Image 1 (cartoon, rainbow, N blue to C red):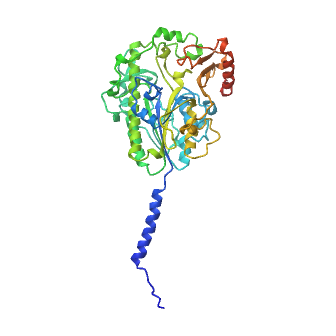
Image 2: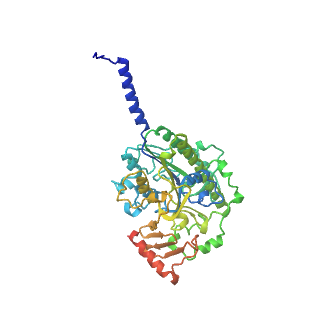
Image 3: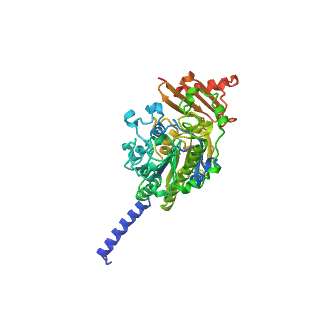
Length: 484
């Protein structure tokens, strides 16, 4: 028998090698990337949003996001003030755990070893990038700077500057409505409606840069945080958004009725508000209406930027592999009870939007009415992306809510107002009740029945018929309180 010895040619050998290498690379390319996170925040945004029941504010893109996932209808900030609230979101810890209770406290100095949310994913190999306001930035004072950012959280950060900062002398401030150089615009009733394009404003630049970040890092897992400065005062947006809200359609509460709403409220609860009541330093009703119009315009401006981000995910085929989170740092008064701004323990100042959609969110157009907290975001994202939740976090994962099935949740929401060491208020919110104690009850308390009084107009704390529920809620609240 003759044996034929067949020698493969060099070209054949090279061809086989190329095929093997190509196959390896093809398999590598097809291997799924870890899921991404798009972390979107708004500043001082209350729930005047279409999907939260507003019949006036136009928010088609936020509404679109809610239809894609789960809207948490009763979400509460840990403190109705930018700095402490944002530190709580990013650390997953309560203000009393970190000691971050003032506007400009330094999280890293107070808790040097804290692993922030972005830092957690950066440590897992994610690209962690920020554009705009995530930790506290004074608005407009800190626009264009790092503000009170935490450098260990990010691989990269961007601080755009738009005409709202560059030409802030054009902003109209009340009372008086005069133009010219302004001070303390971050605590003002002020607006500007220039005929301009979105990309000329800081928030338009935030959205555009976030889109670039998505495109640049789509081939690696990313944690991209886009922080919008609107609708925080001064309320500045392109005129086209103001045109959505004719001033004659802006409604304001009756001030006589508003004054009666405050008659049974402890003095400490509104000690910052009584000096300039109504609104802010005797701003007129017509001036307040103009500011409310401007606030609504700013919301619609933010909504348009959210639309850009959602479009970017879809255009890059990233939506199914990206969990999207939309949140605000606290609520906001727009004349209810004659009050304006935040820093109050009322529902209006504490309730915020929270929407999750995309990767890991199997439920669509779902509404959750159980009270949850902003500090629940951190453990939720860690859990949703398959990591072990750090035991030191104060929040709880909301992942079970992201499924189609019902989920029983008994945990209340705890919030606090810190005026100073000797003036503190803590509140507990259950599905039905809000209970508030000022200085442990020594400076007064409040009890509101949300089943019958969603606007918190009748304080039941001294009604003997509610003594047992008051005692129960006080006992539940006590472990979270701290007085010096």
